[in-house]
Image 1 (cartoon, rainbow, N blue to C red):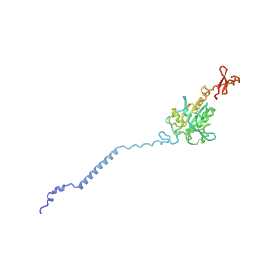
Image 2: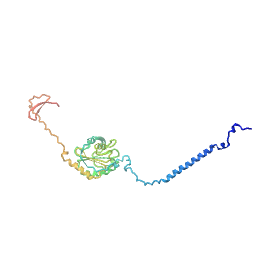
Image 3: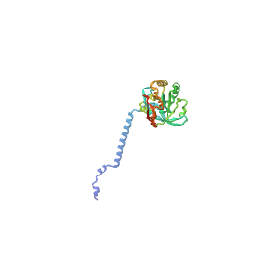
Image 4: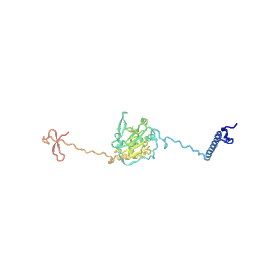
Length: 298
């Protein structure tokens, strides 16, 4: 029987050489495994060539007051300033602080009640004023209080100490070491104390200057001495106070005498010879001594 057309065109050799899909799959998987192994070997070899990083010694432990570390709330008094604090000195010329003297602070009355008053209202009219900005949480503030208290023994009544407390804490607990002060003020100024804000405007203190801040005002209530930070040289501070006390005896601090106007002597009853009307007053001229009738405007 003759073969059908379906089997006539087949070549057994060609048929045997046809690609088997299973073989192709196995061959591809082998190539992937080979290339994967080469890649992994390459990565491991590069890592072996890199020297290990040296171990770093542990750095110093940073504390809240160290530079570069944010200050905790309420630690203004213990914060190190951006620049070294220098001992205060008498200014080259007096500075007008009228805007500061108009600032209002809470003032404790003798009966224990409180009221707000301008700073000018608690300053002596003719004398030396020591203004000290402090807070109960400020360590340097409390350290300098005994020094001020000791210096007060040689100041006399013409030097007045005016403490201005930043709000917060009870000042009663520090009565034993605080300087004597007839008036104690509390600053409720938001966003920084009123003294800091006004002195920054004058260019005498940097922004956010730390407390304590101490000022000296002379007999004319002008700024003569200022320092931010603790007053450590109390002798130098006392010399500045004594210098301003000596100025109290100079013409600069002398009270201007008001011109005394002598009273006008009453005119005799017949001086104007009864010429003045009811609404007029008979007075004597100071130049020639004659009398005249003037309209009574009062």
